[in-house]
Structures are given as C-alpha cells and as structure tokens.
Image: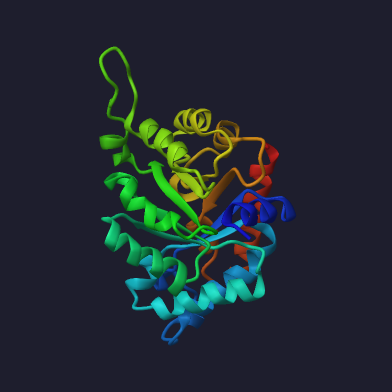
Length: 273
C-alpha cells in the first residue's frame, strides 16, 4: 500500500488527524529509565502503545536518536510499529536535502535501513535533489514549504515573482510540488503558527497531504489550523504534536498522561473538522 493510501486509511480508521512526534530527550524521561541501555526505545515504544489507537501517523525525529547514538533503537522502534500497528504509517523526520547522488543514499537510509513510510525533505536544491526519493514509488516525500519557526520568514516569505507579480518563495515551492507530484507521493510541511499561509498553500495544492507542526508547545492555534488546512480527501491534513504529548508527565504515570494529552488533542482537532 502506498503512503498516501495508508495515511488516508489510518486517518479514517482512528477518526484522527493527529500525528505524534517521537522526539526522545532522556533528560525528560521518568526516573525508571535513567541508566538503562535501551531507554530511548523503551520509552518511545510505551508512548506508541499508549497512543496508537488515537493517531493517523507517528513521526520519529532522527536527530534525537542520532545525538544519543541510538540509531539502532530507531530501527527497532520503527520495526516495532510496523509489527504491532501495521496500519499506522511512520514518517521519518530527517529533513534531508542534497545533490542527487547523495540523495540516493539518504533515500536508501530512510526507506531501506529504517523502513519509514515517508521522509521529510528540504527541496532547496531543486527537482534533481528530490527525484531519488520519488523513485521509491510506494513511499511518501514531504517537502518543507512554510515552516513553523520564526526564522522561516527570512527566506520563505521572499518575493520571487516577476515584474508586476508577487509570489512568495513558499508559494513557489507549493507550485513546484504540484508539478513534481506525478506519482501522488508528495506532501508539504506547513507550520501551524502561520494559518493564513496554510490556507494559501491549500488553495495551490488541492488535496495534497499537509503535515502541520507547531501546535502544543509551539503555540499554534488548533481551530485556525484545521479551518485553514481542511480538504475533502482523507489523509490530506496531519497535525503533529510532540513534546506536549511525550512529556505530559515525567512521573511513573507518564504513559497515561500521554494518552490523555493525545485524546484531548485529537478531540480538539476533531471539534473543528
């Protein structure tokens, strides 16, 4: 099954637009995990078990694993999700972006080594840097478009239009994504902190999947995000929350707290669907 079909099916089955980001920071783990050899895997697997019935996708952030020399735990975690929850897609948040020959290796890393269903990619280097990911026909490729960080406007809001025209760089990225999306594999990252830009991107790309970070700890407004990003097709909107769910509690009841936070977030999202 392709990533986009898998995402649509999971969204419908779980009545959810929620993506739980897996950004493990051992300094925030409950005391029981301190000093354990595979604490990152164990913590994340418990979070997955606590929230799997509430989500449309999981999104592990590769830097949080690599910084702790825990790439093997990331491989094991994704394998665990595939084995226990085969209907839920896994998005590897790697934000890769490099020339074609290097991109081929990054694609192999994401899809062969880690067995992710989709990967985030920086499209700044153009079409030939994206094509190696698109060669994996059943996988998703989620391009950065309008990111949620304050500095995103430094480049993404630049006017790249010709005389008499005005087109922001993020809008050009959205248009190029439509042009490159012959296989229906592409989605876009658009931050919840910019709901007007979410609506603009939606108008350009139609039902293409949008991955929206920035609610929860980053302060994005759920109602504005859902109303700006809504579309007819299932799986066209995926709203990510990471820290607000992972670290809802740091005591022994952390899993129950994460479940409650995920339930509350899903309910808040569904209220405005």
